[in-house]
Image 1 (cartoon, rainbow, N blue to C red):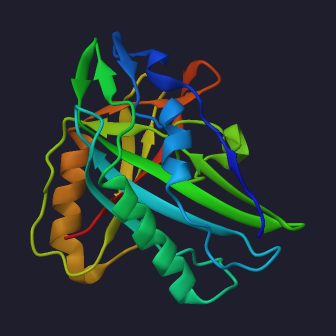
Image 2: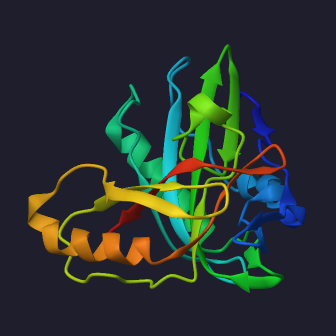
Amino acid sequence: MNKVSKLLIVLLGSSVSILAYGLEVSPANFGTFTADFVEKLSFPKIDDGSPLTVKCAARISARGKFDSIVCFDDPGFKGERRISRSAGAAIAKIARNSRIFPARVDGRRVQVWYNFSVLYRHQGGEETIQIIDNHLRNQADYGTNYIAAQRYNARTRVCSGLRSAVIIRAAISESGEVADVSPLQENPSEANCTRKIIQAMEGSAYIPAYYEGDAVASTYIEIFVE
C-alpha cells in the first residue's frame, strides 16, 4: 500500500493580515488546520500520472465553520467520472465537521465565501494530497500558493429558484475594490438571477487575494447554486 504524503501547501494561519480600504483584514484559510483535514481524507483510486483536482466553494462562518459547501467534478480528470464525484462528496462531508481560521476585518470575525481546491496526485508510486486556498485562477501571476479573494458579510441568498449554477467573475484590486463583474458564461435561462447577483456583488465588500505577505489584485470567481 502506498503511503500518502500530506503536503501542507498553505501554512499561514490566523496571523495573516493585510490592509484594504484602510481596514486590517485577515482572509479565511486552512493554515495549520491543513494536516487535520488531510488526515481525514481517503485517497481516490486514480492511475499513476492522472491527477485529480476537486474545486470546492464554501460559506465560512465567523467561527471558522463550513456553513455550506459545494464541490465540483474535475473536467480534466482522465479517470472515471464517478471517482471525481465521489472525491468531491467525501470532501464536502468531512468539511461539514471541520473548521479553518475565520476571516477578520479590523479584529472582528466575519462570514466569507471561500474557494479552495484539493489536489490528488499519484506519481511514481507516491500518493500526495495538497490543499490550497484558491481555485487556480491566477496561476500565471502567483502560481498556486496564494489565498484567493473573499467576499464577506454578504447575503447568503441573492436569488431563489436557480435551476442551474451561475458563475460570476470579478476583478478585485489589492485594496479590495470590485470592478468588471460579469458572468463567466452566458446563461439565458438565468438572466434575471444573474442580473441580481451581479448587483449584489458590485455592492459587496471584499478581502483581496494574499500572496507572499502582500495584498494583490486578482480575478475572483463565485459560484451561485440553489
